[in-house]
Image (cartoon, rainbow, N blue to C red):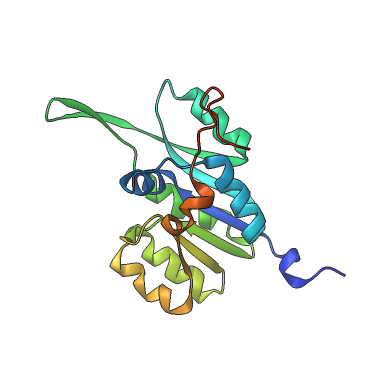
Length: 178
């Protein structure tokens, strides 16, 4: 007989930019394959939506992320000049909120991967409807608007999972250890 937890459909909604920049700010390189496996093993995540800005030339990265098991939702990006350097902007917040609502009836619980306070209203709504499982914040510097959710043990800090989620070099063409 299967338990109740195995019957639940768990979806993850991931702000790739917030996650990537948060990890980089800590000085380590994130292993996306390990992260997808972590979501599958720890939380039984059946679908992991990764919201990412689309930049021409990154097709290899996108194919790799899909191979890892992520469902990519692309946001068009804008290029602009700042201090003589080209910057790329692709804020995915609206897409993440929209897709979490489009999929709302398809999942039992949701995991939001971001420390961005812009998701406060979404997270509050999911908690109110008993659909919030966890908030995975990249660092201890997540938004103060999300701090109240720590009272109910919703917040998991990814920086504390560095040992298991860091990309490690094996010396064989720079690949990660399996």
